[in-house]
Length: 212
Image 1 (cartoon, rainbow, N blue to C red):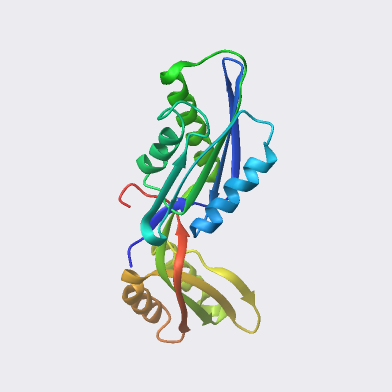
Image 2: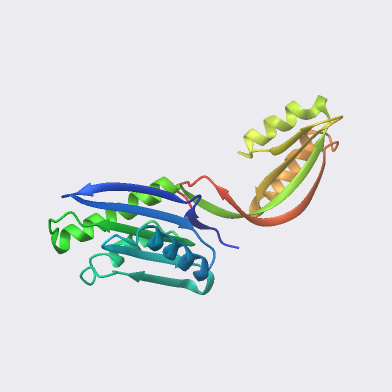
C-alpha cells in the first residue's frame, strides 16, 4: 500500500496583515464528516468573525472541498486548498478565520494572506509521512540487548513500549518492504535467540524525507 502525507496534530497559528487578524487552524481527519465537524467547530468558536474560510482534502473517495465564505471568489478558499495541494497533503482540514481590520487588502493581498495563514497552520500541525508498516513484538535476553539495540539503530528503527522484566520486550514498526531484512538481521545478530512475531499492519507516522 502506498504511503501518504498528512499532519500529526491539531494546531493553530495566526498573524496580522494591515490590521486584519488571520487565524489558521489545521487538523488531521479521516472522513469528510470529520472534516466538516472540525470546520463547524471553528465556525462556532469564531461566530463573530467576518469570514471563516476553509478547505479540506480526504483520501476516502478522493474528496477536495473549499469555501470562500463571503470573500471575493478565488481569493480565499482556493489559496488554502492550493497550499494543501502544493505540500501534497491529504486527510487534512484547514480553516482560516479573518477578523477584518478596516483596511482592504485587494485580491492579491487576500490570496497571499490566506495562503500564508494556511502554511503556518500546517507547519504548526507538523506534517508527517504515513507509511504502511508491520508491527512486531520482540523478546530478547539482556545479554543480547546491546546487539539488538545496535541493529535497530543501523536499520533506523525506534523500539517502543519497552518492558524490562526477566527479558527485554519491545514493539517496533517496520516498513513492509524492509520486513525480510529486519527478520534476517535480528536473527543473525542474536544467533536465532531473539523471539519476534508480527501482530499487526497499519499506517505509521514517520519522519518526512525528501525521497518520499
